[in-house]
Length: 438
Ligand code: AR6
Image 1: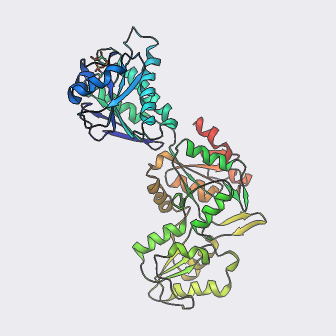
Image 2: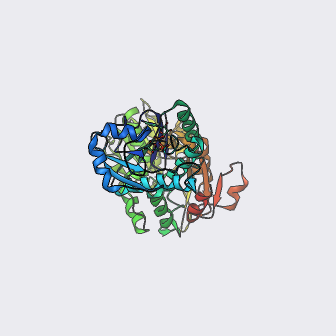
Image 3: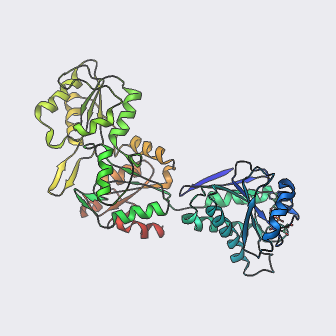
């Protein structure tokens, strides 16, 4: 059995009987024009549903090739039956359009009725004589073309009677969708710079929502909690939710709970501490007894005594683990470049002779944790960011594609180095047009 997840829709094919799909809301009937019991699929469905189905069908008939109507499931385990009349091959023309109409109309009726899962037989490929390979390609293409309009429908199953047909569907489904299917999106520098939105960013995110393309905002920001980022994005017309934002504090608090329970010495801004609520915080004045020393972006709050306290904690026995909330070297604000987390972590690693666990970009583990939330295979995901190292190279090392935008911290010389982005866009506003041509 092959299941593909494409833009939030699960598409699968199974070998079996259409009347034996109890987990599906609706099954599709390869009907005849009068919606009567017949051979093949129609015969099986009417037999399993009982005479009530034929009675309900009577006033709905006749239907024409390409049309679809819906009835209840009667004695079937399914809520509904959608009846389609496929074209008779060599007679009803244009056969390909009429067959596509069957799938399109069935899916539109399903969406109108709030149906979530639909099982299709290979319409027209039995008594009506349509070559199964050509029919299969039309079926899959039509389903994919309908994706943006599927609303409630999130699961489609092709049910094939014969093993040969099933094998062909398996292969076709396996080869489908060469496009990338999901996105990780950096925030700062991609959607906004400082307090200024990037032109077209809100529209690009809205387009992702409309197209149902799964995405996760992946930021190395450790200077503010997700709640503040949600508010900030809302000011730019981007309505989102904390669950769609993945940041080093979130990854770090999960990791510390599992790997270094005990008092955490938090070198993060006060506002970000809420993300670590599940951990015990070490008293801010002690210089020993930490299980972990967590370094975030303290910006101008860094001072020698503060950095030195982190160093002393790291030197105390038993030695705590040093955790870096990302390894971003610098960021660009409206007034110019600012040191980020990495330089301070490097200083502490050097002085205390230890290696930090990096829970943020460009660490592969961080990208992988984000991908796990998206439930999308690595190879099907791309990362879009303004940092050639943290975003593009980090994503490429984790097995994704990395797309660079010429906004935020981008500098033309970024393109002269060894790291080659998979694509370079002037800004995220170009994303929809670029994606369509993938
Ligand atoms: N479950 C899944 N697939 C099936 C089943 C089943 N129970 N039975 C057959 N198939 P067909 P059509 C496969 O002939 O070509 C009827 O008599 C079958 O192997 O049911 O659209 C109607 O009354 C084939 O691959 O549908 C119409 O007059 C595919 O399903 C006419 O046949 C479709 O076969 C419709 O012809």
